[in-house]
Image (cartoon, rainbow, N blue to C red; front, side, top):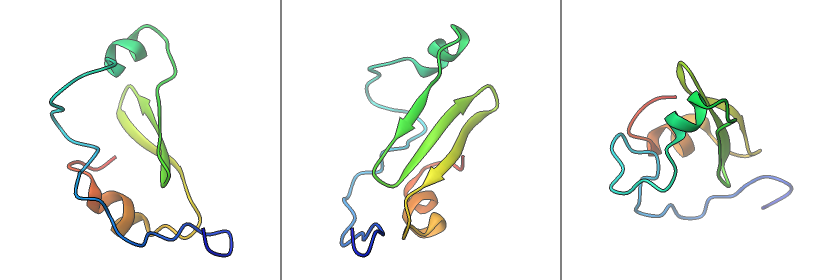
Length: 77
């Protein structure tokens, strides 16, 4: 954080939001069908899973949505 804004000095090499994960620890789709609230909380943003798909709920101050979030995903929320 610099002056209350997130400063991304260097991105890691791993894309975290992928179309096909190699391992599933929690079946979010099933959780959603069971009436559970499904949130993905990262240092950059908060996403909510809905019946229509993933929704970007909020993002950290200083984050460029296109460069720092969407470009790091294999799909668009």
